[in-house]
Image (cartoon, rainbow, N blue to C red; front, top):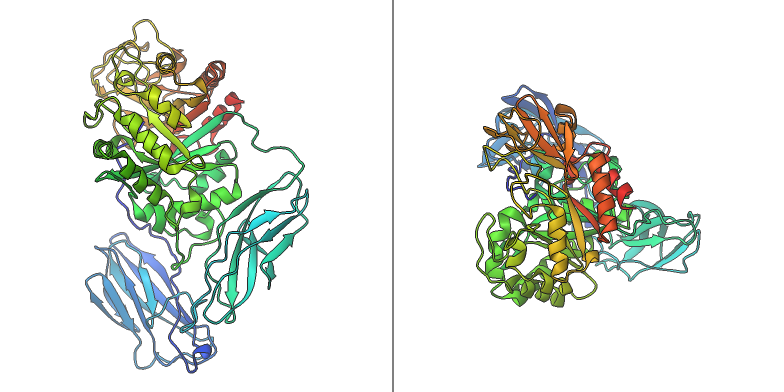
Length: 606
């Protein structure tokens, strides 16, 4: 399943503090510090009341202040009090009145306004500086990030860490050592031995420098450490991979932290982050707001620490970084293409080496290079038709994957999501998947979406049959035939992952419970007609029966097919017996809040 729909990025109405720092006193080291904090005090649907509070957090008196911020288009100030508020397009400026500009140390002043629209402020500035009250001191640059720590002298209960020094224009005073994002020590040298640890336990360490003004710089890269002794918390020999969708943070309100609260993070081995785009023959970041900019509050964050306005990386990528620190066994791959973005692969295939070079550059961008362990290519479909038709030829896919392996080398995972069309002369036969197998670590075989309400009048059929069955609408449209065909092309079984959909496909206007009935169109779905998440279907349309290793349900005039705990267990047993490398699923947000489908896959894979 590769959804084409994606919600438009928007700001949630969150009461997030936006804070900052006011300019220089004399001399620079006696700088006056202050914060500006925003609160939405009332909301009546078509408008709201907002309040800014300016507080002097420094040691010298402030004689005047100016607060600036941006509102998204459609949100505006309609009236204000206790400040003079003006605007230029979507940029707003509030200056103190003659009687409330002076703030002694520890004093604060508030001004308010009525607004129209529903947006929240961003890009706050307080008297030309940041709005968070520090730790930046005007005229004094914060230190650089130290080198990623290296671990040595590992025992059951301790580890020695060392790192390369940070730099600073006025000198580094000391270093904070963070374990799992929490400070455990402050040292003046570039090494530290952490003790009192638990045997056989995963830990993650980063380091942060402080300068002579006590300003902290960016956090170093993370080092994963596992103490000796104990037992392996993730003993699975099989791959259990899930797709995390970039756009899920919008309408679905599904975030990286959901992998933690659902318990899924401890039961998976890999994540495919979907999707990067393919434009002008190159790999490119798609939605920068969701991936790198979206700010998370402490309660929304994997680490429990709120994002700041000036940190180098926020969004999904930073949350994935925190997830990997908490669960060091998880590997993350960046998936490029998908149903919507596969049209760019034809141009990429004209110069595979240049394409591979562009992909390596974006995956290894220094802002997030530590987040990704590999790349996944989701070309739907080479030398065949998907959303558009490709005519690159049967060798194009093999050449593309070979170029990626050459560029990325052996230290990165290189994988591909591929067709599961096992029919004679079908999509598997259209490209050299056998030849390309030498370049990949594994294939995600998309053994779902065989049948659905794009055939509006039916016949009804399960969208993810494990095997063929009497009356199946198209021969070869099942998992077993697809896997057999790929093996016949010399793809090793261990390089094949079985695909599971965490959703159902359905029709309406159906009177027959058994598969093969007629319909009048697609059943209603929450996000798209003809498709619905498992977590909804398990209650709204319970299973009627099973066929070909998957389930179906007839309720009212609707007919759905989807996998359940029982059918997933059966499919995982089949995958093990076939010697497959494991399984994968599309995608996390379709599961229940307690991750019951992920658990079923993990238990079934063994």
